Length: 360
Picture 1 (spheres, helix red, strand yellow):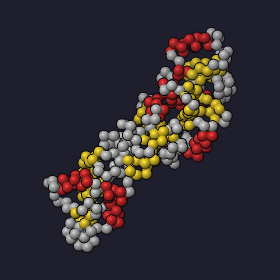
Picture 2 (cartoon, one colour):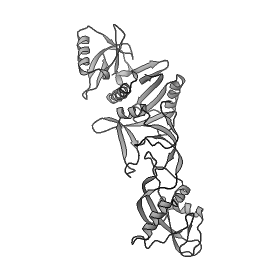
Picture 3 (cartoon, helix red, strand yellow):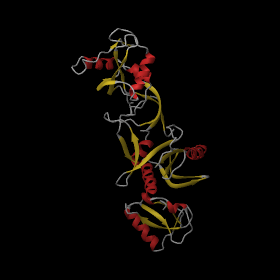
Picture 4 (cartoon, rainbow, N blue to C red):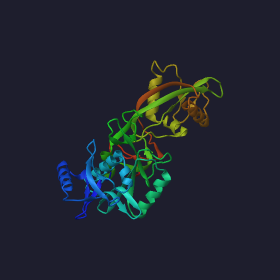
């Protein structure tokens, strides 16, 4: 079920999703009347016009025609290609669907001001090795490729070389792009953008690759209090750590235990801790720290950082002794930046430090 056909008389291409309803009806009547004959670029066989139950315009192979792989494309695959092609056209690109060149064929090929782009929609499973092999072909021919997967390769890690994003199909059979980030304090929120909108964001560099993640300065953070036995006096001593913050673009930053411990000494975090300890709810918890390290509130013995890191990890894994968890709005005085390769998609155009546009 291709989206592109060729008018045999003048060799002009016709891209089905780009035609208005009136243009589609005129072409259909001309084909039915024998005034025009359509052939398909996938196999040079004859074609006729067809519209899916959901309104997707496309072409189909004439009956009793030779077998062609394009016959077996799913309607979802066609719809995804159509949405990407429409996004490219809306952003001023010259577009060809199912574009063949040398030893590759792009689902959607777009060109503008010398920039050559290829979009691939992978509905069936494909390994990362095969994806990288096909990517090298595009790279060799100076074409920037971008992949959309119904099932992401399990070993894919975000990188600037191979741009890849997961697809989703909702209950209404609309195709979108999964993008998980923390919005309004909810880390479980997975946003799904329409494929056409998402492709438009990519084309306009609203989504870029960043090698590092920078913690958002003002955000809701969770502070976890726990206790362990002091190595000197053997009394229960209380400590705390801060859970992972989110980046400017809303992604969770996975800090090391050392980084989480040091983040607890941020001035605004310490202020929030002290405010809680002075409340009725926190009066039974006794924390002793001087802004650089913790000590026992009973005997004053400074606690070794290595022990605190070990205990913090144990609590996070459910093997320690958590006492209380609180959430507070914090404005960090400490700049927190970690190595975190990711596709950065901030709501306010505040990217996480160094950024590489997809189409460079």
